[in-house]
Image (cartoon, rainbow, N blue to C red):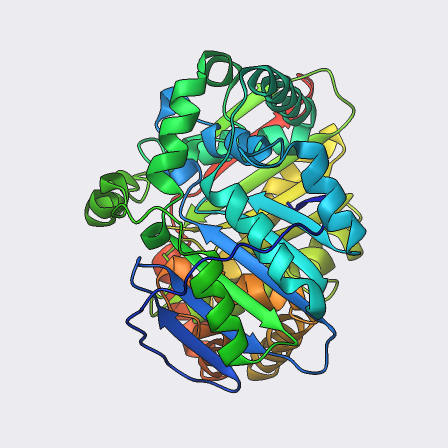
Length: 445
């Protein structure tokens, strides 16, 4: 989910460049630096582009929110583009727009992002606007009420979509004690209760240099990028990483135990279709079994030649859509199957899903099927990084997840090493005790 708004240029801050302690690791035109204020900076040169992306990734999202204040990160990200102490929301938009640039962002389970894309000659101004958003948000009381209405409308919109509702039910059942159960948007109760003071406190606690990763990618040299970042982002708060992040790492697995038995949750609605999500607790980013689970997921439900699609939709015509996904998260992820079907086919589709899961547990997939899955993963992996903003995002995301920016190069190598026996092993280990969430009409069987 990427929210994109347009904006452009403003006057350059004449801030002295601070000294920094810089640790760097290089990989094909990339360097990693740690500034004195704790900001991790990753720079990737791409001289073939005339653009520069500057992207800030912040450890803030549902994983780091309390149930009573869920939705804070999404709410706050919307507030940032509504104005700072130096610029109104209209001035922010006009500044970037006049440069032919873009300002965008998004919020996920583990992080929130803000980025600018501009022609390389305007990178100074783009960086200054981004730094202003990260340090000087105004959080005007009137804007808070406007943004509250936006958040509430997103909650209502999400609740009105049966598949989205099924996903929320699935998350709540799979993560009964873990904050991953919470929606990015929060609840009507939590959003209505949020105060300006809580938003400001969350902003000051989480939008700090040690809690961020900044990525600069595009047509700019390493030296120029680093000099600009040191100057422009010197004003970021240097408060330590929030305590919740530190203790969560210690207790996270205990908050997300493997279900002791299979579980079903169902919500009846007067709708035309039945929507199904069925899944299992997975592993966190960097786990030794992630690559094998990734190949398993490709075989099971990625693309038109996957087992779920061929058996349930192609051969039998039982579902409008059917697929599977594997979550990459800082904490315990999941592997999740989903489908939409006519209500009379509900039980048949669920049985078909479980049958394909059991096939993977019972026997190793053929070597040629595994090789095809691995080629598909690596190919899609490359395609997902074709545009400059995606390149910047993934480098920062991997750093936020704790696997390091060089995971971008390591991942294809890890996939290439997965064997058929590995796929069966992780199927037997992780595809046990499923959670099934269904949103369907009362007559669905």
